[in-house]
Length: 377
Image 1 (cartoon, one colour):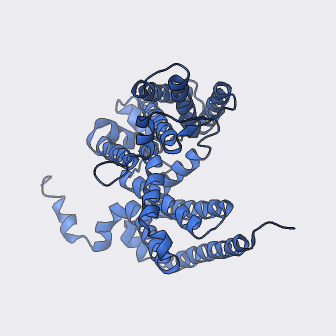
Image 2: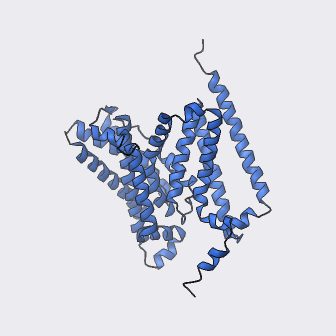
């Protein structure tokens, strides 16, 4: 009976119930399709150029490794606000090793990744040993790492690196995909396999679902949290190497918004900020969504500040949606099927419509002001 029981709900499932496990992936994909349709009407020639699509992939690839690792951190009810500084400091150290001390590119890259892992280890120890909350601990370490980068760089912009570095950041491979895109996709695949096929992945979800119960079952919660932060630091350092190669330059103030962009992508992709729910595919879709949205705003010549408004609105809508779905599940509304059939859904549509309408108004204002900008006097 135990072997045959799972087949009963599968046969009796409706389409809505079968789609429920993939909501985290379907949500951002629906928004991606909406962006594609909108740009196909407004700016098809510029947006769908091969060079522009290639640029979208390059921009997304930079965040893929960090989004994958951040999925593990957030799933364990953690957060890491230091990844931008980790990326910058790793890139600065790699650059100095090559420029000042004559290290070869492969050795400098390896040292940068090790340095990122060490910074992740420090973050994990601050949180688990000193019992500093994740938010405060990683924010403080962000200041520390950024300060060290400023001290080392002394205001210098280091540029012109060996071919291996630029290949990692913007090279073209033999399979018609940019090298950084391949690197990003490989890290996503590795993250998916780790999350779904290893004890570490299962422990990650268990810790996020109930840390106390996980401890009672024999899981070393603190140790696995440290592992997650080490993983995060390594991927942030990899992103620093990719950023250095993409720009063929690096400075101490690089990557200032990495943390917000990566956390946004992971949350938009359906990973719960309250822990216990993770989706690597959703994180990949979230990265692509944000890169496509920002690129669309640039294509429409909307100023950077309005891009921030749009990104924030997308994050709020996504978090509100997933939080509401979780609440309805806890209230016993039969999951997504019960939610879609509830009487309160019309009010949710109205609220979402009001938010989207306000966003559209803000975007329209941005377009008007963008069109009127120019030298005065």
